[in-house]
Length: 276
Image 1 (cartoon, rainbow, N blue to C red):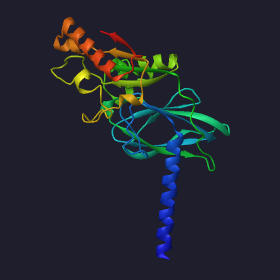
Image 2 (cartoon, rainbow, N blue to C red; image 1 turned 90 degrees about the vertical axis):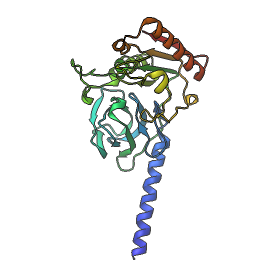
Image 3 (cartoon, helix red, strand yellow; image 1 turned 30 degrees about the vertical axis):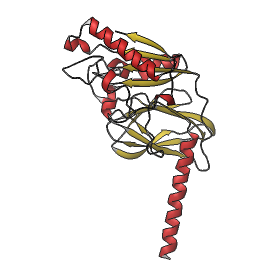
Image 4 (tube, rainbow, N blue to C red; image 1 turned 180 degrees about the horizontal axis):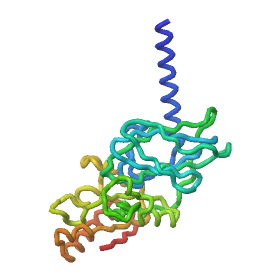
């Protein structure tokens, strides 16, 4: 009897894992530098990472594991965003309910920065008998932003100048708004306080220490630039360099060098737009 019970538990565990695997496969629209080292628990580190899926039924819950202090948006059927304030550890969050019993679209969007840590997506909970039905087609355009606090969406949700996570909102930062206006896929590689040359006495700049990272918290992780090639690259850095009195000549040289580094990684069809 004990053996049968163990076998039953094992089968339930395997079926649950299989269901989660199928969910992950059907969610084809992951966008951003998302860490898939564990394919059943992909981690969102950079601001503006998101996933899109289509689901059947009247409601859907989202399962997330927060390693920091993150806030996410849920957008149903391209409507107004709903805020999810994550709690540390694993939890299930209600995304929506009371929908018509048909096919709907969900977008799950990380609005906080790298400073708030990573969050892992571990699955959906759907109505009984319902499932995912494949993701919408990807946009044809792709745009990538490298920047600092204004690109991240630092304090966008208040008139203050504070680093509180609740006021950070990458969804309303200019890069994300631009991407949606152009119907383009969007990558955001940005960190508040980061310079193009030097800031606050720190050598932790974007061109030498951060632009290449897959996992923003791991200097040894390297993004595969062949996975996703943008048509346009926007570099908006330099606001923080003034605190270290970086001059115009040094800034221009750093921009040129960084632009050439990115060109070596990306298709010749990508265009760079730089702002100083």
